[in-house]
Image 1 (cartoon, rainbow, N blue to C red):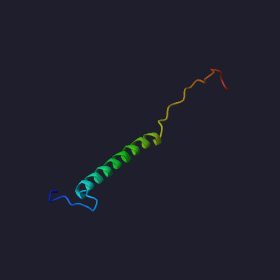
Image 2: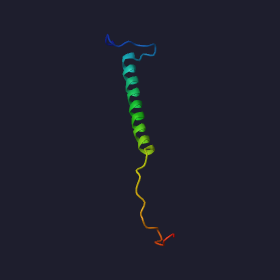
Image 3: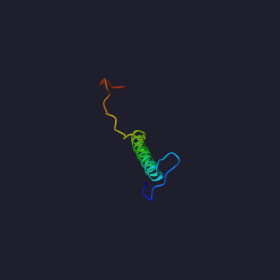
Length: 63
């Protein structure tokens, strides 16, 4: 016999267990989405500006 808090559907599954599973799936999807946003923000972020070296790569003056 099932506990009072669990209700059965026509297929014999308890709706209480199904809602817990649904919430676990929703939580994992939200966590994956948040981590994807963090990773994407790291790739899309503005790169740091580095000062160009004063000498040319070949060492020859241009003027």
